[in-house]
Image 1 (cartoon, one colour):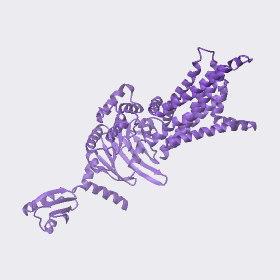
Image 2: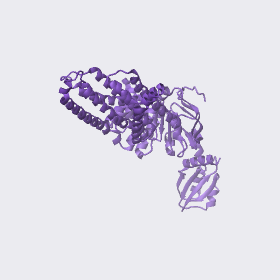
Image 3: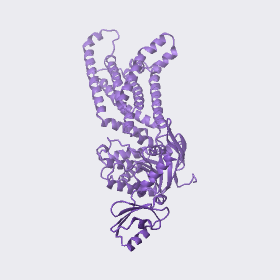
Image 4: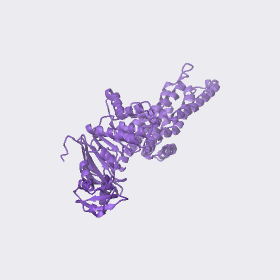
Length: 314
Length: 256
């Protein structure tokens, strides 16, 4: 990890924050490159928001250093902040302004030159699906649209680094899909950090994940690594003519079988093996009437629970 | 950047009924007082004419109007300043300013400039009343300039105190009461502390106490006397409270 790598847009080392005697974030490291979306996952109170507040200069760290595009955030906050766009948990919206006025103010505050300001506002509005709401007062918009205005505010100055704190909270499913597509798109040109506790969201949009728990990073890997970690541990099968449970246990690679209702079994695999194929051919040969084979849906949640409780025990 | 924030503050002020209400009430009260004093002046005019060096219309009508305006600012400024930081904290909109490439000093100075621009409107409305008499009589423009300067200095020091009070809490109403309480305490102190200290021969503590006595410093300029220390005092007070507010805002980042 070379800290002067030009593609490295966020580089935080040994970041800590204490509130009195309570340690909210404990010596975490964080790197994000251009064109990368990092998901910050964790249960409530894990320190995600505190970390993001430190990365955006809203909160001074107790220890550690933060470099944004190789500019020290604590040393030269004005230069560094110009390269960051931040959507906090509660979007910082002035309800008495209309959308266009508000985004124009955000652009001015982020020192977008006068000549390009109108274009920047129009681009941000188009990207966030706000093209028709320019003259509406922010106070009269629905929660979903307010959230979009919050995102537009974070991207209006084309920052290198975009930090979004739970961007899809309180949105309806269609809006969530829109916002995820937008984040994915932003991630191609910029660096994005997003915090969430919705696990499928991380799979849908992130390139890398860091899971936080009690202020420390307990898991840091790519999405592929996360999938590897969780892959094919259990499947559920449904059979019309189920054989004796011992016949299922006999298939190579099966660790354990538990009945899960009439003709249904929950099959746990041994580590590093995937006997699904053997299971299907055995079902065909034995005429068991296999009509359903589902990988366990909650596998990502399992990983999460496993990691966070592991950290608790150790 | 300061003007961007000032513009935003002005817009916010004018979208709330409070600003309009303050403008209306101040103008109604001052207008009534002005007309009443003008009426009194006209009644005693013949008696004044017999005096050797009679006080002019500026002294008898404009000066008391300015004094009333000063007293009204004592109530109005904490009310106008209360939302500026406290409400931004409560609504968590301060994050927009804190995340932007803007220094704490620029944020506070921007808000101060916005508030002063609004108060300038009040001061200009006050000035407009005696100026309306121009076609009918001769005004003492020197005294009028002194009064206007004194009112502006007073508005600046009140604004700085009000802004600091607003930075102390996330409850706008509490900020208004706090600001009002601080100004009132300074007013009482100014009435007595400076003089009694000076009477004991303690010149330096007396000079220090005078900095915290905005209304005491209003008097010399209000009589048309250019007392440089009385002009420096409100400026010092303004700067001191603006620095306190900046430090307070920065402290929030450090302490969380």
